[in-house]
Length: 215
Image 1 (spheres, rainbow, N blue to C red):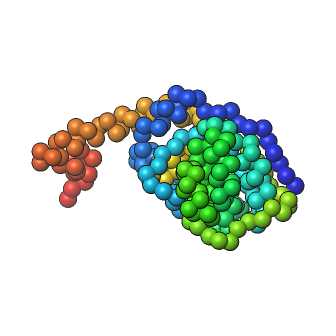
Image 2: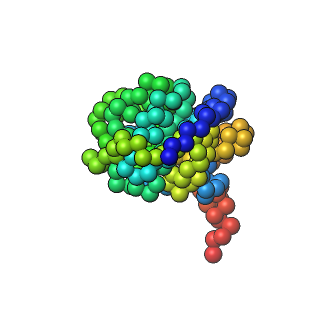
Image 3: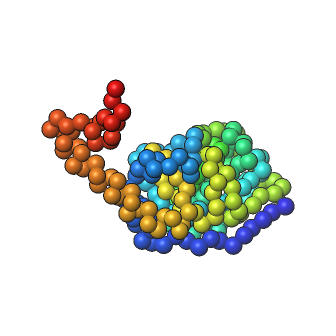
C-alpha cells in the first residue's frame, strides 16, 4: 500500500535566512531533542536549511524514494526513514542527481547511501549512516510520502525545518523556527567578547558559569 500526501508548505525565506547564519550545535546548548543522532555528512564543510519532504520505505523497497525525488521543489530536503534498515542504501547517484536537479538543498537518510564519487560530483549535501554497495530495489511493495517518520531517533513531520551544518542535523517545528534564529544568533554573539576576555587571561569557567560549581 502506498500513501502519497500533498506536499507541505515550504518554510518562509526569512526563516531560512535567519537559521542559515547560526550553528546547529548552538541549538544543542538549549535542547536535547530533535537531532538526527548517528548520521554523518558526505562532505564537510556543508550547511543547508530547508523544508522536510518525508518518506518512509519498508527496508528493501525504495519505490517511494524515487516518486518523492520527482516531487521535490527548490528549497526542499529529502528525509527518508528506512524502517530500521541501516545496512542498505536507498540513495545513489541518480536519486542525488534528480534531487539536485529539482532544486533540493540536501537529503537526510536514516540508512546508507552509495555512488560516493558520483554523489559528491553533483554537490548534494547528504547525511546518512555511511556507504554500502548493498542497495534497495524498486519492488512496488509499499511506502509513504509526507507522513510523520522517525530519523536518527527524532520524529520528523512533513514541512518541518531541516537545519544542517558540518556538526549535524536538527528538525524544528516551523512555527518555533520563525523566532529561533534571532535567539541562536544572540547566544553566538555573546561569545565574541568572551573570546577577547579569555585571550587577555580571562576565565572560560567564569563566562560559562562553571566557576560557580568550583569546589
